[in-house]
Image (cartoon, rainbow, N blue to C red; front, side, top):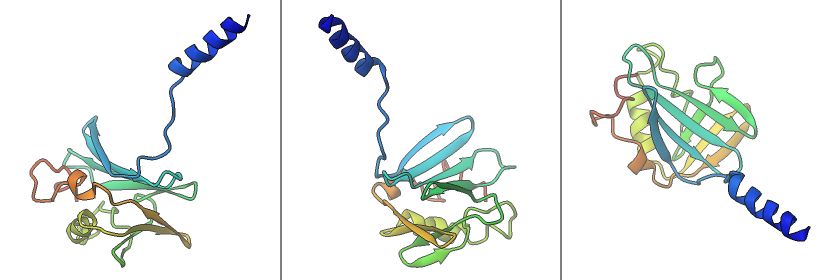
Length: 149
């Protein structure tokens, strides 16, 4: 009887996927016509940037701060603080005037040493490890963020 319990435990540990809490560094991926750049702090706080390769769509982002979700497409949005400079809802780029500060913000973000998200009086710090490697320059022709603002 004990060998069956042991066998079940071994099999369940092999078959059951393990959820790892946070990568603590920037990563990127592409799927369904969208480049995504993401980072999390391992405590459930994260930033996900979406850059579509369709010129009729815009850059957007979502954030999770202290268990609450925020979107750059909402009226409230969220602020990003890069090395002490506050960028107010910088991913809201759904009109050309709205996105005029995006190139300055993107370059600051790529070079960030200290990165924070702020919303509703809450502030969380996010890692900057690998940020410059994962976020391509707006001069990079493969960067879908460059045409979506």
